[in-house]
Amino acid sequence: MQASYVEVRNILKNIHLPLTKQEIIQEAIRHGASLQIIDDLNNIPDREYTSSNDIVKEFCGKKVR
Image 1 (cartoon, rainbow, N blue to C red):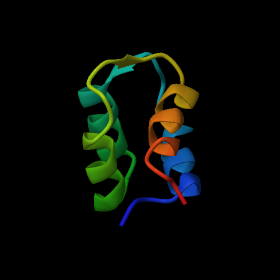
Image 2: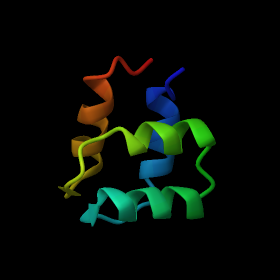
Image 3: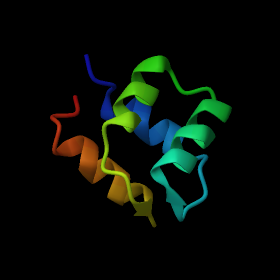
Image 4: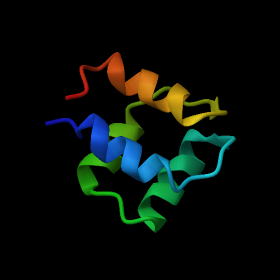
């Protein structure tokens, strides 16, 4: 099961970008992200992200609910 759009947005609002995928995962853990969100973040492309919209777009391509 994939994390919801709202869950992802709530975590991302606390993360200051730009960050790499691994840095985003570390920050998400630090901000209390669920295991589902961490798992989903592990599945986004490995690159630097400059905005939360960039990250959400990756989730949207994977049918975020």
